[in-house]
Image 1: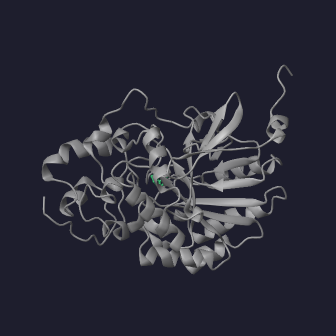
Image 2: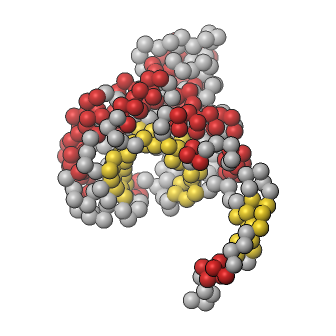
Image 3: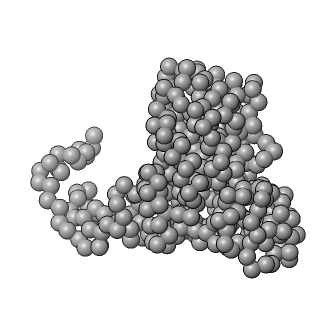
Length: 362
Ligand code: SF4
């Protein structure tokens, strides 16, 4: 394998592309062909240019590895239970007031740790016009749904025309007040965020874009420009990241990521514990280590940069915060609190604390 990866002029999709670009050794060809039979690969030029070494924090996220063929006991093909919660193709309904709309399963790149890795890919999962209309009809028929989350795949891979058609259909539903778009495109393929695309996002609904970013280096000048084009339409951009071994699992890399996001006017929203998708164990960071990482940053980075560390409970039971705890309790009463340096302090709440406790036996 050459010492330095060669810049790619087009999206890398095959094992041959990876070998030719210096991102995979010739000797790994047959193992990687086996990985390719299970999972898609795509590395767009903007992302490939950031890779200094195949095992660096950028390369690890997108270059396939034979370790993906090893499935551990706790891993499952639908870790957060999307399939069981899908009333019609393209819709996932987990919470009373929200629903996911997945218009396609295509992504600008294919993350090697993706929780939907068994489903996403370039060949499948685009809702045709009739299927899209059935999914929209389901939303029309459910007035309790106030927020629709466009996800996939990556909805920013739609054409601006099709994106506009979906946004117009959603904003015409009187009960839908909020639209959220989950996307990796601003960092993976920023040129796709055109003026035409951001015009398609213009809506009377409360629109939020949630960018998936895992490492500070992903926020290139081009990515920041793409984010700015979205923000220029008065659309807030917030971020979700996945805690990944070898990518952002040190206090320094996590701090750099959070600071880079805030400097791009992007509020870190969620830091996800990795979902147990098949063949992803090389990325897993134990929850206790994640808590220690966040605790190490408390008091060191601005509260603006502080994401909620969350676990999507396997099996579709919902998301819960799992960050470090600071309160010390005794017999259901708060008695103390730890400061960012780990020192304990007494908390005096007086009688109001007793009044707030639920009464026993009722
Ligand atoms: S962009 Fe999102 S949906 Fe697509 S592979 Fe990455 S994590 Fe999965």
